[in-house]
Length: 135
Image (cartoon, rainbow, N blue to C red; front, side):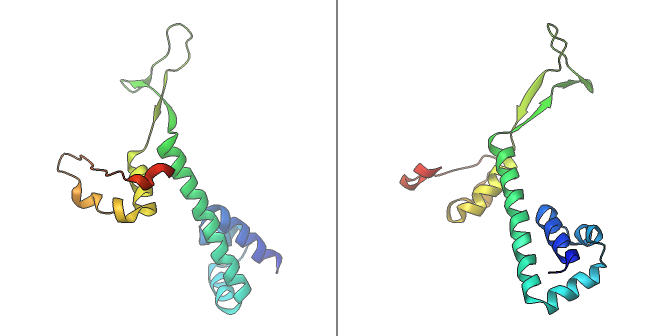
């Protein structure tokens, strides 16, 4: 495989961005699509690269939903410092929105219907069954 094709596919696997990957490979975007249409091996590599990039995005979404991210505590637009140490006070923020997306993707039979069941106040109803031991 030509070097520019490999560079494109490697960057696509990191970013899922065709335009940026073409730029990094030094190739016009239209040429990239021509290669994909004309070269089945390159087309398969493209599909694999997009799967890898999507897997990485899903892993990051899961990390943010489950582990959360540290962020400084703000008050009046300023970072609040610990009076004893002077270090910024930090809190862990989790993403309920990402959690809902992941649950809908991985357990659609149970969690897709949440959209209809969510009340006007945003309350979410979750039914647990015996097969939830893996959660």
